[in-house]
Amino acid sequence: MEKNMNYSEYQEVTHRCGQLWIWSAVCIVLFVPVAVCLKYGAWPQFTSVLKGLLGVAPIYWTVGFIEVVTFTPMLGTAGTYLSFVTGNVSALKVPAALNAMESAGVKPATEEGEIVSTIAIATASIVTTIIIALGVLLFAQLTPVINSPALKPAFDNILPALFGGLGVVYISRNWKISIVPMVFMIVLFILVPSLGRSVGILVPAGIILALGASRIMYKKGWL
Amino acid sequence: MNNTSSFSPNSPFMYGLAAAVILFVFAQSFFFLIRAVRRAHAVGMDISIVRKTIGSTALFTLAPAFSIMLGVITLAKFLGLPLPWIRLSVIGAITYELPAATSTANALGISLSETVTDPSVFSAIAWVMTLGIIPSIVLPPLLIKKIQKGIVQIKTKDEKWGDIFMTSLFMGMISAFSGMVFSRVREGLPGLLPVAVLAVSALAMCICGLLVKKAHVKWLENYAMPFSMIAGMVFASCASSAFGL
Image 1 (tube, each protein chain N blue to C red):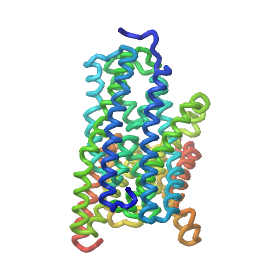
Image 2 (cartoon, one colour; image 1 turned 135 degrees about the horizontal axis):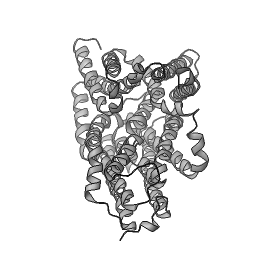
Image 3 (cartoon, rainbow over the protein chains, first blue to last red; image 1 turned 45 degrees about the vertical axis):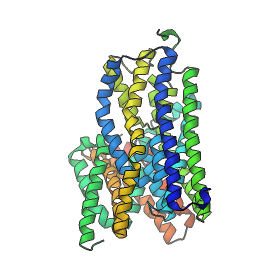
């Protein structure tokens, strides 16, 4: 019974369940285009897929690798297996986990942190899936409302609205750690605006910078 | 054998596929949710933390979820509803799927201004969308244990540095996304709207923090994040004309 397991035994079971779920998800994801091809007898030409893939794969595969390496420590075990299946990791799952752990007063990479981040990520996945399903069911009625010019600026500015609140919480508690990466990133994006389209690649740069500055300050006894 | 005449991106078959995928996502999410709640009980965690986490996360997720739904509607114009529904419910994000569809359409020399009716074009787009994001789902099970082992080693060696290490990871991500908000400031007034939204959301969070700490409005603690986010978005809607949009 899981109830009587210690944390490391519980984590081992989480890994086994997670591996089962995520490899099943790989099969399901690949089954979708296969099913379309089989049902309609419409296998695409290899060169068409290759050409289309060449336009996106170099950047997507790089960003995919970077996201896995950078976000896995933040998401916890179950959170990682769930987030990388349900997607929208950087704009929804990581902030949801972060906000929940902060509100609950628990630390990441602890048992309490694992529990709280899993609950937050699972809730975010369920709510998102329900909202999208409702959107599909009410497509005709909702399209004019969602596409209305009055709401467009609100949806265009979800990320600033999200990171404004989240930033204040984190910066106020860890202002020394935040100075170097924040100043660097703000100056960088002002000087090179085109980087706004490749923020995924700059996350590890921000992390390396934050880690480097923190290490120096820690060694000097400033933290 | 090309079934072109009977093909529709909105066929019942496609909806059936979408329903199966959505059920899988639900099953996985509920599985981990129930397991985590049971574990919280087993380790004696305060159940009110569990309830508050679920409530505040659900509220916090509403705005991003509507934004994702907007992505489904955008893609539905040329791919029908079921495929974008599948792609944005599993792994995908509009920032991946739209360029993937556009790249394939360009490679095939077709326009995405109207609904795709050729099944081979549709299947090519479905394959590019799928293969484009496949490392994001294949790599976690292969790398997770190695990454976590590294984190445990850091924490075991020096616990204080371990905590600072984790905070720095989060701070690196927050700094990149917050910095991105400034990428349009050189466009003039319209480019300052995202910065103003960031500031309003930050201000709303500060007010919530003061209400929690000074006025002891304890319940607000768990809802401060969704409230500040909504404040930022409402401001964006109301003030867009003042920013020349």
